[in-house]
Amino acid sequence: MQLYHGFGVQDVVGIRYGYKGLDPASGIHPIPLRPQHVADIH
Image (tube, one colour):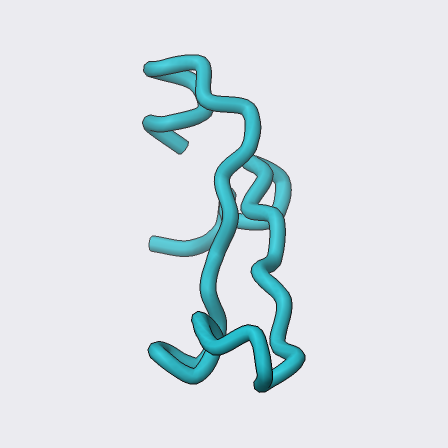
């Protein structure tokens, strides 16, 4: 939320499953983290 609203960063992504999510061979793609997706995470 701070990146988006405070610093104006429009493209924030989340990496799923730790280091496995960073491996292109795993086929796990980053997910976009928009304010409406993360608003209820405390």
